[in-house]
Image (cartoon, rainbow, N blue to C red; front, side, top):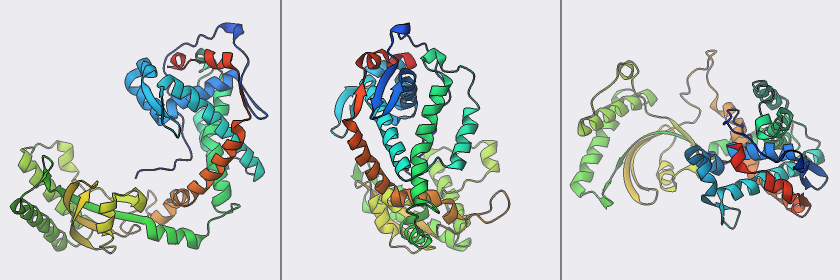
Length: 372
């Protein structure tokens, strides 16, 4: 599933080797102030480090290009302004710090504390830190821990404290169940493209593909018309594909573990809109051969088994039936209510934007290059 809403970002604890040269005592002690909250230089560096290794844009560029990535151009902000990655990191670091202050203000307004269970998990991660692990980067473990807890706990705790069970805006069981039933889709699929070299196949070639999919449908029906039966059809599809590509080699391990079709669990808004359209033509538990424009361009024919999201889930480690509805509780709430919370946080951030004081000398001294 393409998770658009991620409330709890787990920060990477694996460190890159490096040394921060900040000019010793001449570096200012205070880097940034947001209203009445002071971020000292060590706090600022810790947030910059956290940004570099958790922000998706920064992390991916640094992962592939290392220090050379810092001079490459990326887009930043609502207006997609073109900046260097180094500038992007500086700007995003400051955005993160302002955002955490906004969230902390909202937590105080609603009298919400850190979620106890999440705090326990974070503290277990913190225990893995080595003594003075971050001193080479210009800040101590305490600064890192403070940043780590804020980034990991603030937003998640605010969300849970508002919308989860017992929260100040608690989502009712009836509303949650209704949303789950209307928006969750679960399916298995065998897709075959009707295109080659950007051109649609001939009518005869399409007829052959349809006949092939009908054969898989027959296998499904003959073997029990359930998820396991679909896997049998899928294995035949793999065998047919292997013959077409002369790729018949299998490892001993693959021989031991029969292939199964992936069960795809998703939310309607994350699905290809054309696939969703034909999916809705099937009831839960039904199977059918459907044709649609994948991605709006690639004409595709597929055998689709639409499944009940809660059915055929198997057993957990204790031998109990897996309750997918219960396991999806947090995710469901996020899809239902995160946009509402984000709007409130963004509005709070706007009120703080003109209450930010930056120490230019400190900001210039904090060079992302030295944290790689």
